[in-house]
Image (cartoon, rainbow, N blue to C red; front, top):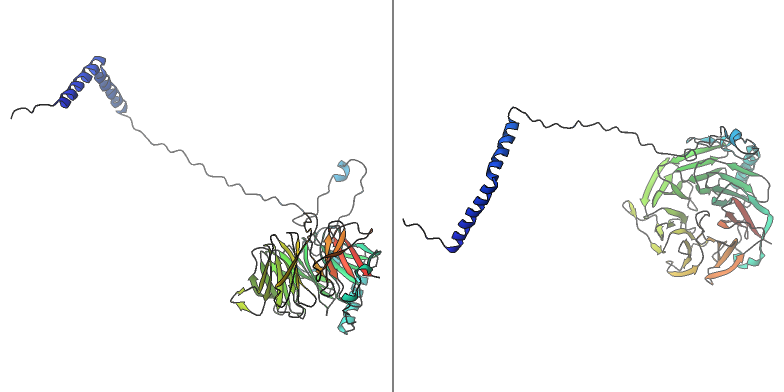
Length: 460
């Protein structure tokens, strides 16, 4: 076959190959590449390569030490050496160790006041006997005729009941005694007979008191709840603080229906409502009602099946405990605020509901289905050092009482839907944050401050 004729491209390609070969031959690149290849081959002859794996060092697991202060563990501070190392004269003081026992605690062990328990126990037992005999004075509903201008603060009705910030305040619901029970952020519970000089102070808990429950029919048994998840019963007859209930979550509120005696209602953990049945000694029901903690639980006095809850999730709700959907409750009404709702209380008649929120408002809801809403602007930003404001109803549906940042008490009219008056006194040296009204003494209003003081306003 005749050789195929090359075209111009192929001739150009062969010419470039020939030229490149001539250049490489001139530079002796081929010979040097061969020498390098032979050198590497000779280096590999008679040698053996190994893949040396680095030795894996064992991990030394050091235990994670969680630092906890002595205060959170309930251990008194170690004051050894402080007297000698301090500057200037010092007087050593005897400090009573904090209560860390989770079982029953005797009143003597929990006592932190100088006064003996005997007189206090005798007085409470005497009151309990009177109430058991049904010696009561029927409460007069004269709120409408009560002149707000007649309310005044007597210096004799001021006392520092507990150290530190007060978180809970309750009057004894009795016509024969004017006594208050007070809880603070340290776990103390104090009792003061209004106008008296003695204060009886105990420490059955190690964290802020979230609720004090005094049953009208039995003053010798007082329930206290705490952020440490413990519910205790102060049994005056046995002179102990007995352990009723303990949980891993905090207890933020404590309540009891008006006609109830056997079941306690607890705000447990984040949004949970727990029913504790004393007859069987355990939980009977538990629902998660809110997305965040429940701050207050309040029952309608006319319909004890209806309960109102306020929550840090910015809502207040009403519920009917008779109607459940499996393990869930469905809210009857939901009242929404822009920030945390610190309280939701039914009025004495049960026809209205008042809410207090950190969005600087007080809501008043009335009507058959609480559909008639009124919003009153009020400064509720107390800051981190004061207990939050919670507007409290008076002796009927006419007025609400709430703290004022200028050391006063604002009176809100539910009829006029505005602040109509501010109670002020030169004897009030602190901002009142929490309030309660005496059930049988119309015009007797208690206000508690973050300094441990209790102020009792009375009617002239």
